[in-house]
Amino acid sequence: DGAPISAIAPAHRRKGFIALDEKGNLGVFHSTAHRTLLVQPVADSSGVITLSPRANRLLLEQGGKIHRFALSNPHPEISWSALWGKVWYESYDKPAYVWQSTAATTDFEPKLSLSPLTFGTLKAAFYAMILAAPLAIAAAVYTAYFMAPAMRRKVKPVIELMEALPTVILGFFAGLFLAPYVEGHLPGVFSLLLLTPLGILLAGLLWSCLPERIRLSLPAGWEAALLIPVVLAVGAFALWLSPHLETTFFGGDMRLWLSHDLGITYDQRNALIVGLAMGFAVIPNIFSIAEDAIFSVPRSLTYGSLALGATPWQTLTRVVILTASPGIFSALMIGMGRAVGETMIVLMATGNTPVMEVNIFEGMRTLAANVAVEMPESEVGGSHYRVLFLSALVLLTFTFVMNTLAELIRQRLRKKYASL
Image 1 (cartoon, rainbow, N blue to C red):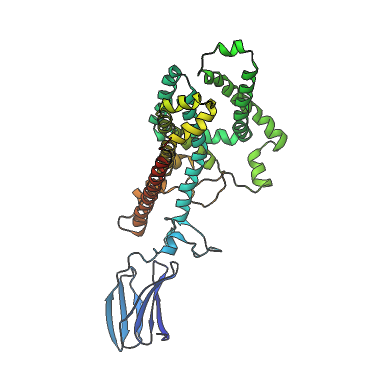
Image 2 (cartoon, rainbow, N blue to C red):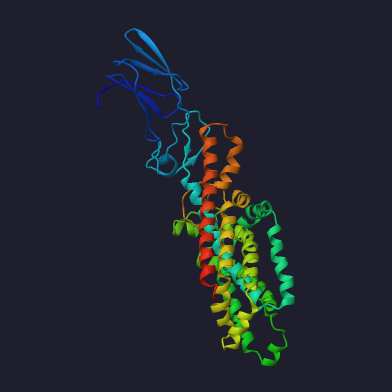
């Protein structure tokens, strides 16, 4: 009601305080979380107040008498703004999204923002899906529609067997071998990503220029076997070219060139490593479901389209893909869910730095990895412990909402193309 404040007492271990006005109204506040936790009349007029070291007892001296009050305030630092908004912490030059649950000093203030963890989860899934989705869908289309049945019976089980690889092994490999190798061969890695599709297109062009007698000597559907040496040769060439590109264009060290000339921070374990490792882990999930969906399209639709004069490519893009689109979309959503919930790969290959940077050369920390790392060290019942459970609930909610939307879209696609 606007009465002047007559007494203030700070909390010993938290960034909070209590205040008493001249009318005897007591207020409990937390400065970092910007929360007014309690405003309640406790006396008829002002007095002297103090807090116990644990902030669970309050003493009020008024008129020569001491009044004792119990104060239940276990988690004052938790609020919507503290969890999801920028907070201006002590000794920081500006508000920021920060997750830092522990420190070496006793006067440390926990910083429990879920924003960098949620951002890291989406960032890791995004880069993994950039690699996995096109490769898996393209492989599923070719395997189900173009590949010879005998070759399909060999290729499909091999790709599905990749799903059985433990993610801890993939994370271990990515963190200890792939990350330092990519750091030392950055030009070669990016050259590989550019030269591989160009090499495949060039090989297809050269194959089409060969005499018909040679091309017909290869059974239909076995053309993919010719791409194996092409991909291996392009990969070997790109990696051989790496030091020459680095010397010619980047002064002998592309990492220093990125840092000094472009101002781009480079961490050895970064989003690029996670995209490569987790994309490799997600490919079998997407491929298996999408390939089954494409292969299950009735042959009568394909034969009917071809009989009406459509080319195989027109039949694929305008009949087969549209009919199989609900299954393909489900495959992508399941792959996305796998990437969002992945723990061991991002735990071992990212550096676990909870930062909000879109830079592909910086690391991140995901919700799942954060729970795995910090749950054993958290105090049962404490704010940190409860926020970790909240982060798990956020991950569950995100997955549930994403799967629900995916199912709605899948049903809509099924109704739309059911008449084909």
